[in-house]
Amino acid sequence: MRQRLSAIFLFGMAHGLGRHDPASVIKGALAPLIKGRQPALIDMEELKCLFHQVELIPAHPVTMLALRFLALTVVRPGEVHAIGWHELSEDKSFWIIPAERMKIRREHVVPLSRQAQEILQAVSVLTGKGPLADLPDETEEVIGDRGYDSNRIRLSLAERNITACILPRKNRKSKPPYNWNLYKKRHLIENMFAKLKDWRRVATRYERCAHTFMSAIHIAASFIFYLKE
Image 1 (cartoon, rainbow, N blue to C red):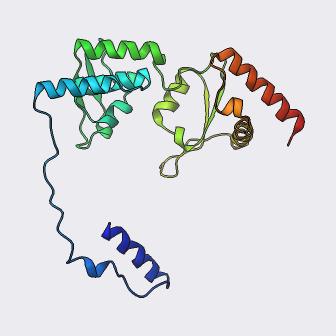
Image 2: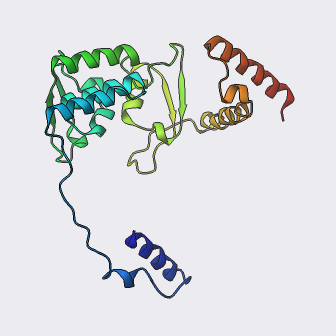
């Protein structure tokens, strides 16, 4: 905390907004931070209790399966989040993590148990083996902001012959081309969603049934279109 405050005061001094850094004078008065080992569960009963508590979390089914897969493979959460189907061996018994995703910059092979393979099979049913698997079959182009700019998503779209109109990240060394005129239409879609949120029945989803909820959206969209507020 002292370092953050000191950085703020130094920024102000550099821009002529102040002359002193009051956070620096208390450095010697603060007790040193003692770093210890992270707590670990070594008792089997405590571990079972932890797994039971995790299973009770009201999360998405894919999230719950990812947590189970994480416990079975003992890898970093970021590796499970970025896993691609092309990284699995043909018989799904091994998961080969590419070197560019590893801290040691070396390819890592993770053996998959029968339970881990069953989890992957369940995930494939829920997601359709793709990050954007719920897209209609007739989809020709996908518009997305920088948050969707990943090689995994672009590869998934290319495999389905879908053109990616995605704004590339600023830190990309080689920026993929995209249709700027088409990308600008994304703003119109966002405006439509913003107007739909003004309708409480839509924003809070009063209706439980999907077809009734869609009917409410159609009514709200019709009013928005004709009123043009």
